[in-house]
Image (cartoon, rainbow, N blue to C red; front, side, top):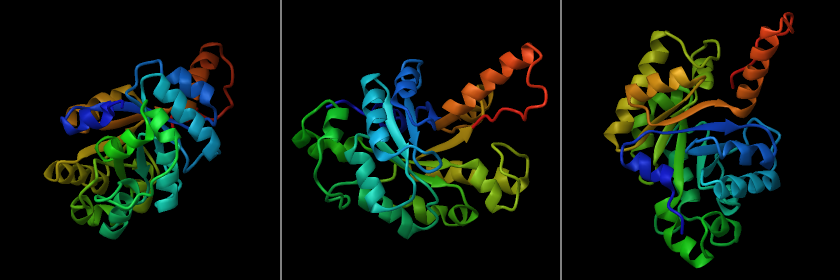
Length: 265
């Protein structure tokens, strides 16, 4: 069975960097699997990607030697089980704001005795390059479980959330976190409440032996956050990179002057 190199890196205190896939196609997923990222996250919360396409993406990403992850539409046992059964090596669960919600994540993602994930399926084993029986024995040691800290309630309850056994990383969603503070959604800001929240996440994660993570807009921000101690770092997204490069080309040619600025996420 393949080792989940991302989980291994995070457990060793090393950084691991990837990006978000919002385009609903396995073709671009396979291409991005060849550029050097540790992992690629198939976006299911805010994209038109369906389960069948996600399953194809997981297999293509794994075939490229990269860890296929996914952000779920919501924190439900059905979503967690389905994503993992279809071949994801890990789940990123949005809006985990309480200990009970964190416990529900682990319950759905881990097999007994750590959780209560149901046994079945074939694609999970194929994705890890093994047989189902081996997968069932080792999945608890390889599947990556990440909860998101993206609301002030989650920040307030972070100690209780991260005390739940079975969580590997906590991932800051800066846009939603800003919004929950009554601020404009943004990857970055100097607002004291936001800055303090990031530091609280980083310190609390380290306290519980959990990897702190964050989504950033570009490579410069990723380098800065890595230097600060963040480990699980997402850089922009496939569509963000596409639009950014397209805007760079059209700007150099004097085109598209009346068009809005390209998104980075």
